Image 1 (tube, rainbow, N blue to C red):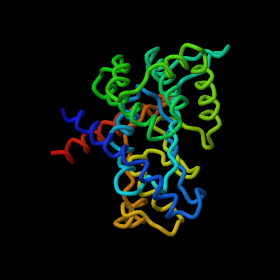
Image 2: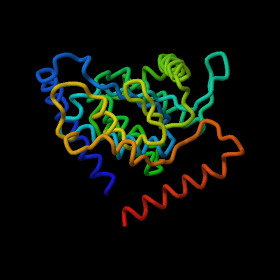
Image 3: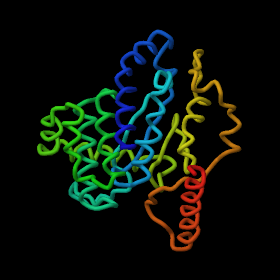
Length: 257
């Protein structure tokens, strides 16, 4: 029930996205003033799903979305094998859903069209029901044909390879997901604090209300290590990474009590 309420809440916010876009056109002198926010992720990494479901929707609160150009890149830690084939970190289902989400972005290029679908699919991952992803078409009143045609025609695979090339070209290279980049700068394991970085990067005259209460030095004073899905874990650092992840979970549990 709680997950359903979050889903309904974000849809209500997204229904206002057109109004936010219109307002941003009036208040911002040019699109160049927008802050670039890119999420490199994979569909079945639970930390990617958590970020999409519980953190990205904050963009739609107040007027933050008016200063942000958000892009989603569903490839993550997948590995190319040659001849256009690849393996995904969490198996064939992740490859399927990465392609489905790539097709959704292609079929519905506008953020307020594809984000609700991706949110719905990732919410099912958090509920451990990723194979029910097709139910998102009905929940959102979307036609499944554009996504299915993209997947079955081979276009989806081409999109995957484009996202693979973009991800592999990252400088510095990504070492885990979610890998969040603000104006070309990765946030590393402080990705859940992305709003502070967005507000700091924004150079426009009309600072959103969501930024007004932030003191930007807290970006450096409150850095926290959040759980991630590592691309490769060197054996020498496995124990420290495991301890780091466990401590992060404990911290979240204590905070929520």
